[in-house]
Length: 393
Image 1: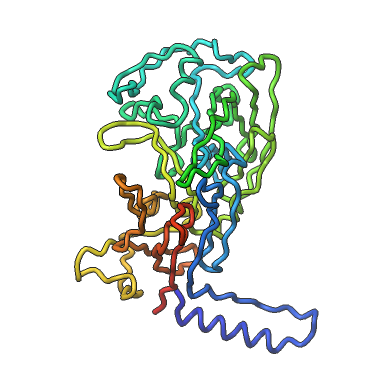
Image 2: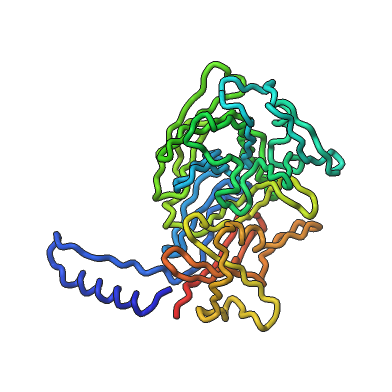
């Protein structure tokens, strides 16, 4: 929040810059946060091909194709692997198996798994999985995905995005403790525009993956399931300027995706997937128009729903209305898809006009933010728009 201290610093720095006439003289530059505006995240239209990161303090956005990576390493003190939820990537650990060359579809699990599933009539049932091939049947994200929430078994990262919610267990610095995982590489981005939203294309297949770490870097071993002779490796050093460093298993390289952790607040992933409850039924769920915020980087926010005159409207909300106790610190999906509504009878999608958000970035700037569009002027999904404003005393 801009205050008298900030104003004083700005005044002093301006005086210092004015007093320096030599090209070699040092200068101090203070860039105040933008006061707000209207932003159209470049999500990409009907197939929502891009993941877009927005920095509210500058009004800048950075986009990258959501099919450019499958997994990402965490650059903090814990040794974690994140999945690309925007590409419907999932992963299952092969308990007790740490030789990557030994794994094929025919490999038997060290212990059978009893998992929840849905049959073709959408009725909850259970399956017993004995081999890698049987496990792979229920690994892709979708209504028929396997899992067991009561037993803590999920093959996707949690919706909230906390470190303890990753499908990969924390990577151990003892190599022999790190098992092989079967990674479902998600789905292609469709290219056919059928006049409506179309985000999930053909399956991209599977790989076997094993990750090692010394605490400062990660070594990622990966191969096709038919390869029993060798594997490829990628080494990724931790870089604490970023939350995550993305890796393309299909291209065998590190990929630049996110901005530095202090330089973005909102993530318009467009597509988002996870294993969770839909009503009383557990299934693999996929959303469009989904929005996250940078919890790993320290950004917090909360939702305001205008239900009656006791709650200020977006227009009337001021810094005096901020409630610090409402900020969500450990749930990146507070916005999620809740900013828009879908009429499932007509397919019409609209912005929820009773909802807006209060955001606090890592520089303690406060903003109010509301969505103003979910479609283009011609009614095509994949064209979100939002308005935001810096809240000052």
